[in-house]
Length: 404
Image (tube, rainbow, N blue to C red; front, side, top):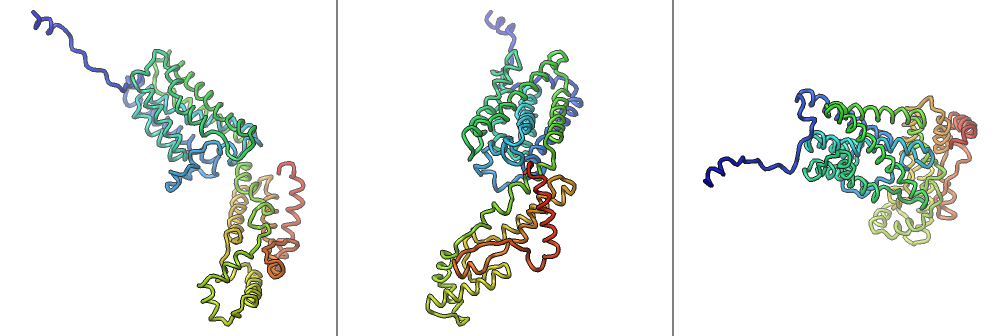
C-alpha cells in the first residue's frame, strides 16, 4: 500500500538558486541580436564616460587597478568639466552613470546573470571604473537570485541597487573641496539613481504589457545615451572639455615649478656628495668649500643660460622645471591641433607664448642661490615670432576674460 502511494506521488525537481528571466523564452536568435545591440550601446556609454573624464575614449591603466584613486568617484564631478562651473554637467554625469548603474541589473533580471558579465567588464575596462564594477557584480547576482525574485520586478531592481547606492554614498564625495561643495558633489549620483530607476520603470512597465520582448533595454539605453550626448554638446561642448583638460588648469603663472625656489639645499647636497666630489676632482675645481661653492654657482649660471642643469648637480623635483615645461607644451599643442576654431584658442596661444618667454634669472643664482624666472621679453631665438604671438594673445585674452 505504501509503495503504491509512493509511486503515485509526483517527483518535483529541486529549484535552482539562480533563475532565468522571461526574455529568454523567446527565439534564441532574436534574443542574441537584441542582447548584442544592448552590449554595443552600453559599451559606447562607457567610452563616452571615459571621454568626458580624460579627453580620450579609452585610458585604462592595468598598473593602476589597485590604486585607491580609482575607488574615488567624487573626483569625476570636478575632473574635466566641473559641476561647480557648469551645472549641466550634473545631468550629463547623472544620465551616464544611470545607464552604467542600471542596465547590467536589468539584463540580469530579464535574462540571467551570465548575460550581464560583458556589461560589468565594460564598466571595469572601458569606463575605467573597476571598483564600481564590483558593486554592479553584487547587484547582478542578487537580482538573479530566486529569493529576490519578487512579484514586483521594479521593487526587486530598486532593492538590488543597494551596492551602487553604498558605493556612491561612500566614494562619491569630492576630495579637497569646501564642505558645501563636498555635499554638492553627490548630486550627480543622486541624479544617476533617479535616472536608473526611471529607465528600469519604463523598461519593466512597457515590458509588462509586451511580455518582456527583447529589444527594450538597448532601445532605452540608446535613447538616454543620445540625449546625454546632445545635452553635453549643446550646453557645454567638446571644445570646452578640451580647454578645461589641457589649458585652463595649466596657466604657467600658477605652475609651482616656475615659482621661486631656493637651490641652497640642493647645492649643499651636491657639494657633500662623494660621487660628485670625485667627479669634480678631475676638473681642477677648488678644494676649499667657499671657493668651490662660488665656482659651482658660476657653472650653474652658464648651464642655466642654455636651459639645463649641470650633469653633476643634484636637482630636487621642484627644480626640474624642464620636464614640466615640455609637458605643458604638449598639453597646449593637443588643444591647438584639435580645436583650431575654438573661441578659447587665444588663451591657449597666450599661455604657450608666455611659457616660451620664461627664462631662469641667472643673477639670482649668484646673489640669492634662488631659481627665479623672468618673462619681461622673449628669448632671442624667438623674438620675432613669439613677441607678436604674445601681443595677440594678451589682446584676445582680455576679450575672453569672462570665460577664464
